Structures are given as C-alpha cells and as structure tokens.
Image 1 (cartoon, rainbow, N blue to C red):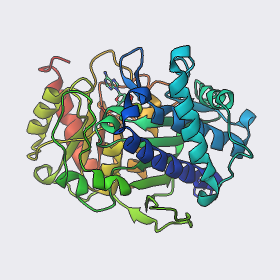
Image 2 (image 1 turned 90 degrees about the horizontal axis):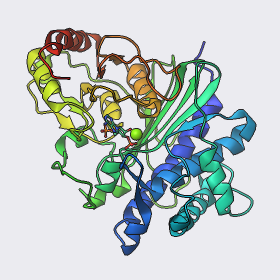
Image 3 (image 1 turned 135 degrees about the vertical axis):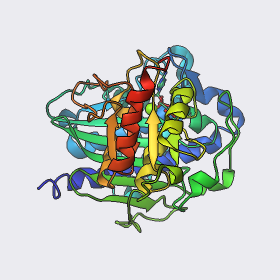
Length: 382
Ligand SMILES: Nc1ncnc2c1ncn2[C@@H]1O[C@H](COP(=O)(O)O)[C@@H](OP(=O)(O)O)[C@H]1O
Ligand SMILES: [Mg+2]
C-alpha cells in the first residue's frame, strides 16, 4: 500500500511550505515600502522574479537538504542564481540573506531544526543552486515552484508555493501553499479581482494577508487535506486543524464554474470561451493566477480548470505536479486535452502534452470537455 509511505516527507514538506507562505506574506507587505525596486527583477524571458522567489527556494532547499541529506536530495525548481550573483544584485542578495535567516530562525515553531548559526550569502546561493536537478524517470525528485504566479504575487492577488515529490515518474506527494486563499468556501468566486493589464503593486484586499491555507495529499490515499495558515507567533501543532477537502459533485455544465489563467499570454481565452459555449457552461470564467486554480478544484470551489498555452510553449512540471495530485486525490480527473495522463517522467517539461490541460471535478464533465476539444479544435487558430 502506498498509503503509509512518505509520512516523513509529507510532514516536512507541509511544515516547510507553511514557513514559506509566511515568508511570502511578509515580503508582500515589504513590497509596499520604498525598498520595492530592490526586490524585483526581470528574468531573461522578461517574467518577474522577486526576493520571495529566491528566499523560498533557498529556505525549502535548506530544510530538505538538512532533513534528508544534501547527497540524497534531488530538487527540480524554477529559480537559478544567475541574476542574484551579479555584482549589481548585491543589495538584493543582502535582502534575500536576511529574509531566509529570519524565516529559518522560526523553524522550531514549526517543529523543524534551524541553522546553528545564520547562513551566509555563499550558503544561500548554494542552497538555491542545489535545486538544479533535471528530474527524470528514476528515483525521487522534489519539484518546487517557490512562488507560482509571480504576477499575481506582485498584484497582491493569488499565488502559490508548490512542492511535490516524484518517485519513479509518479507524483507521490503534493503540497500547495495558498497564502491569499482563505479557508472560507466560495471566497474565490465572490472576490474575483478586476483584471489588470500589467503587474503593479495594488493589493486587492490587504486584510486577507492574515489568511490563507495549505492543501496537501499523498498518492493513493484518496484524501486531500487543508490546514489554515498560522497567525501571529503560534506554534504549529500537527495536524493544525486540518480538514478533509473534496471536489464538487456538480455534473451539470450549466452549474459549473471554470477557472483559467488571468493572462491572455498564458492561455487562449477565445478558445476556452468557444469550448465553454459548446459544452454548455454558462457562468463567467473565474480568472485566477497560479496553481490556486488546482486548489479551487480540489476544495470544490470550482469545477473545471482549462489551460491552452500557445503552440510551442512547453509546460514545466513545477507548475502542475502538486496541483494535479491534489485534484486527483480529492476525487477529480486531470489529463491533457487528448485525455491522456500528464507525464512527469521526462525531466523539467511535460513532454508530449496534447494541446492543453483539463482538470475537472468528475469524469462526466471531463468527458464532455475532451469531446468538445476535438469538435472545436479544427475551427480554432491554435
Ligand atoms: N507563455 C506562457 N504560456 C503558458 N504558461 C506560461 C507562459 N509563460 C509563463 N507561463 C507559466 O504560467 C505560470 C503562471 O500561471 P498562470 O498564468 O496560470 O497564473 C507561470 O508561473 P510563474 O509565475 O511561477 O513563473 C509560468 O510558469
Ligand atoms: Mg510557476
């Protein structure tokens, strides 16, 4: 039985993601101050990266390496140290070092070990670059997106800290920290922020910083759990008010809500609108940044998530691994647009992905959408 496996890994992963979520909340608050410019850079592909991305990667890398041993741990993660190592990034690096040390000092509160002494910049750069594993079909690989939906993070909207464990090509643990997603049912649907064209720092609802949740699951358990983020200086006492979550039981397309990325650059809104029409979905799409969309399906707040990236874009495993397992274990179905399982065995990319990704609360809605993709595809420009 896979049920009893990975207990230690899951336990450590949830605690580490919890710490990372609080780190992100703190950095997000700091972004409002005048130091903002020092905490945000553009990557070569002009996507943004912030102090939070590097700090979370360093923190989680350090915790996993300390717990399981540097030589035993393979981590596939989004960030590298190229930008951060440049002489002109000295200030940024200083902020990252401070942020990571402040976060790791709190480790005992979360039942984890903190460093014997503060980590220096070399150790922190090492921790970030240790996450350069290429993954692959054999063995265990941790998969980390330190801040998924950086654009949402910069807008004070939704973002996620995503950590998964793959063993011999299968995702076996999924942990999704959603610092701006309160536990309350329906919250996401009722609080959809207005769409903004460019990243900017305008917090949708600063009061919600104190809220947030972490979802986690283990392959084969048939269960997905949700814990609230801790407030103040409380100690994490496992299982920290965890409750089971389950996908929605809605099967009628007219009653179903579908989620998709906010950015038109990341998915084809026109194609999904056509698809939605053909399937009989009547509600407005719920546009949400990051893997919080998977969390919404796993929690039963929405029924469908669809993403159709432009031709040629290769989806990365860290953008999906944790979310896919959560939806599946909570009772849902996730495949590519051809109805095939996503393949996490080929390194950092989801190789062979057929057109797009479709996650549904149940098989009936899923079949309808897959059928409609075939019918709609020829008339689309994708
Ligand atoms: N051109 C593109 N097409 C599809 N996805 C893209 C993309 N460029 C970036 N992405 C991915 O989409 C993620 C954001 O998801 P969403 O659009 O659903 O909020 C980004 O994660 P990061 O923010 O971690 O880089 C990135 O990995
Ligand atoms: Mg991402």
